[in-house]
Amino acid sequence: MRIHDIVFAIALTDLFNIKVETAGIAAFLMLIGYSVDTDILLTARVLRGKEGTVLDKILGSMKTGLTMTFAAIAATSIAYFFTPSEVLKQIMIILLFGCLQIFQQHGS
Picture 1 (cartoon, rainbow, N blue to C red):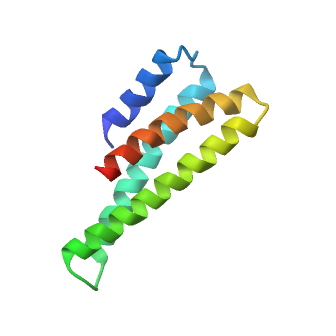
Picture 2: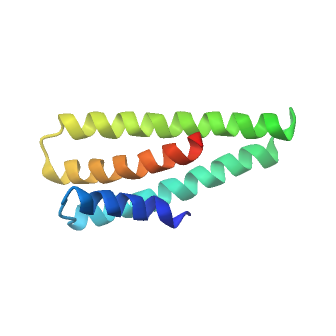
């Protein structure tokens, strides 16, 4: 787990003056889980892959990671704009901030 995934989301939350309630804390915990899950999945793909070179496996893992994160960004964006619930809006915006940071990491 990378601490800057959470710090980035906290910083943007503070920058946009979003009041963090219980749902926001749950969203930060979800970000930790997403970050750990992504790291484990991608590492396992590189280590357990039978075919191709290590570079091919790494590039395949990067492609998978970017696809997963882009899908999460799309889903949280759509949910944020179409839900009437303020609780869900808070969760989605915090998850969106965290996923944008994760997407930036995979892309660089």
